[in-house]
Image (tube, rainbow, N blue to C red; front, side):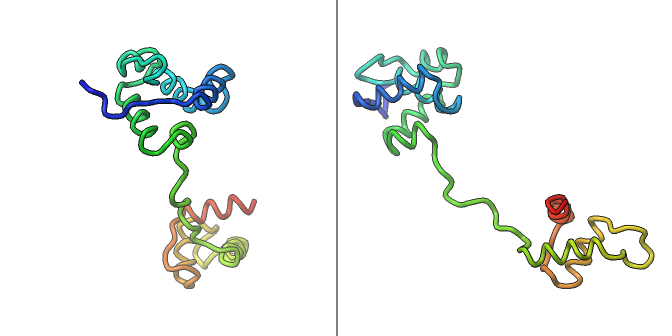
Length: 147
């Protein structure tokens, strides 16, 4: 079958990849990508995808994906990986709200309870309209961070 994405490395790219492989520079994923690109180079080794996959210890689909990523996105993105488009989820509580939760935890529990439970704190935070909704796990993480 004719390959759709053909990898052709420049001399500088080949030198960079050789250095990464030789010195094991970077993460294991980066080293594996470098090995795959070196072996897939049409002007160099030009190994088949199946042979590369067997040598590197991955699936042929991984080799195909790296080959495609190189042609479509470029050398840097292929070697180093994609950066996140969006960051992690925004925080549920800001600093002032966290302080209110901690102060509530340090205060006396409601009547009929010996101690504050995480679920009880979460219910009270929503009841006092500090936030619209919150899970007991967020309360736990907030209190753990405060310790």
